[in-house]
Structures are given as C-alpha cells and as structure tokens.
Image (cartoon, rainbow, N blue to C red; front, top):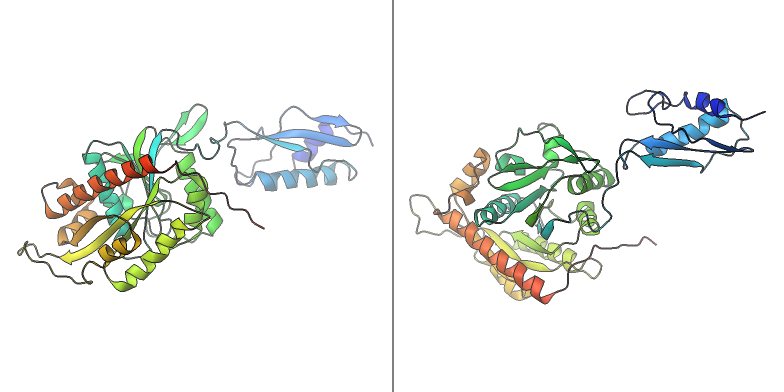
Length: 369
C-alpha cells in the first residue's frame, strides 16, 4: 500500500482535541511538514501553549489513528514532534527575573494566623516604599484575596513577548495572585499534589510580576508537596516561620524549621514571628493577657539561634480589618499597625544580613531513585 500525505491527514481527522472536541486537522494543529520515507512517517503538532495538558494524549491518539485508518505497518511512534505557538516559560531558576528577594512565609500548623501575618507584612513593606508581590500559595484555603479586599477581582491575560501572561491584581501597594481567583469561593479545592503544583507554577511563571523588591509566598500550613514544588521552582532567599506561643504550635513550628533547614532543601531561616502573643482589650490598651502562654516563640527563637522578628498581639481590629479587606498594617499609628511596621523593619534587616553573609539560594534538585 502506498503511503501519501493525504492518507495521513484523513486519518488525523478522526482525532479530536479534548479541550474543544474539534478534530485536530480542522483546528490547525497539524503542521504542513509531513515527511514520508518508506514506511516511516513524521510530522509536527502545534499547540497554543507549551504546557498544554492534553497534548500527550493527543499524540497517542494520533499514532493510533494513523495505524488504524492508514496502515498498521506505518512507523509513527516517537516520530510526532510537538511545537508551541507561544515561547516557553523561562528555564528554572529564572522564572522571576525582576524579583530581588523571595520570602516563604510558613507555619507548622494551621490556625496560627500565618496568612494574616503574611498579608499585613506585605502591606507594611509597601508602606515603607518597597515594591511588593504576594503569592497566595495556600492552595486549599486561599484567604489573601479577602484580606486584601480583592475577593471579587478577576485577573486578565495580556500577551507579552508572544506569551499569554496573567496580570496580578494590585491593592494597598501589593501585587497579588491567588488560586482563589480561579475557583469558586464556595467550592472546596480537591486536587492531587501534581495538579496543585502545576497551578502554583503557572501563578509564578505565567504571570507578569515585573520588578519586585520583596516577593512573599503564603504557604499552606504543615509540610506538603506544595512546599517541595516551591523549593524546586524558585531560589528562596529565606523563610519566615509563624507560630503562636503555645507548646502545641511550637512543636509544629520546629517541624517547619526542620523542613527548610534540612540538607536537601537548605533554605535559610530569616526569623520567627510570634502571633497572638497577648490579648489587649480596646478599652484597656495597657493591659496584656497571655491567652496562649507567654513568649514561647521567643524562647524557641533563642534556642535555635534565630531572630524573633516580631510579636503581634490579639486585637479585635485585626480580625475586623481582615474581613473588611483593609489590613491593620494600613493603620500605622495603631498598636497592631506599629507591630507590623516593626516586623517589616526587622525583616528588612534580616534579609540584608542574610544577603551579606550567605550565597544566593539555588533551587532544590531532588532525584528519585
């Protein structure tokens, strides 16, 4: 049987692209470069984006269609090349070329106010005149959009240098993206680790962050695939660990510290933040009630040899401000506003010290045996 280009094209008309249901020939996905050498056939498929989630299955379907509708003896496996209309993402670790410092904000356990601390820290840094980016990487409980007052925002795509780029939402001087923008508020996010990791990489590498002095990443609580994806994707300048003073939280904070400082990861700890250090009633601003123990995080920092970057009191206005999308760090003359301003100042000093004394962090390369 003679093999000719039209035979191949007719066979490929039986392959439908999963994303649209259209056959790949009509969709313009088959490039006009079919080569036939005896029984060997080769050609290219064109995708819109370099990370097309369906392309591997399309290649397999194309191989099967050619063998079924053309000739079962055609040599096609491994001979289909995939090309993209868009340039690929920059190679690791240069995903964020305009970002000077990447700060991971983490906690060993949930409920310690990590996202509140991260959001207000970002705002406090912006208040000091720095260019700040904030990535809400808490895939399973994204709360930063609400706290920044942009819960109903919808990021747009803009073509930049041939690539479709997500434009971060900006408020209170902070550029921000969150997985919360791409899922319904009322829906639970139930994703496997690989899916969550790919979503995170998109928010990092397919977004136009521009020039940023401090890029804060609000991580999920605990230690998970997301943390591993992050250190394998970006050169983290350092980590900030958030905890409350109580012993249960401190035990988990130790695990968070251990994850970053382990031999394979080796990300410097910039310092600890003690959240909910004490309760101060609005009507008794001089009083302090130590609801979760006293200075537990301060003792842990001293024990480990890390800086205590800040102690944040429990004040009702923190919760109210977060719910209203007006972070308390904006209120620079309030007790909590001053606490976050001090935290920001201490973080600046810690990053400066780290950059003077330590080499730039590389991305983590983990081999699977």
